[in-house]
Length: 229
Picture 1 (tube, rainbow, N blue to C red):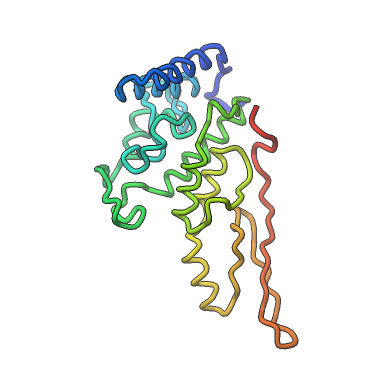
Picture 2 (spheres, one colour; picture 1 turned 90 degrees about the horizontal axis):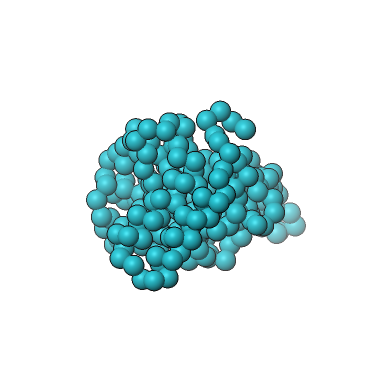
């Protein structure tokens, strides 16, 4: 197990999750629900920064800002524990309520590359600590569909892995409309399938008056190969 991790206390994690679920089911105030969400995230992550493993000045950070996507504010897969230094770095730049009439991240507040990285290291942490239970790292279909649409994909587009890993893969994609425009500028057809990390396009030359064709070669192996328990 990597340096800085610890053995998860499943009993304590499940107890914190039950308190969060009870608060949501009972319609408690947003402030109390957020406090219980924060308690769960820090307990699940072993009371250390998932990025640098510091145990000082910890906060539960919303990977996708709640002001941008309210549906994600209490989801367990949308939180990661960060120390004050890592947390400050994540919030550098624009950190106010976004203008939702503008394109995603037009104001620099969503920080898509940082979101991608945090979902990635959260996935690694869950796998390395044997904690990839869906209820511990849950992202709803609605939230994943929103991420896909942000990147230009249909909501039903398939991405492999557990839900937090899917979030990483969706955000790791170059925006589909941009990639399609670049390919078509070189007279290359753009497949509708995502190009996962390590993948490539294979383009066939035009033959017998038929247009060029392209296929996607995928080499990506999900970090969590089976359905979360």
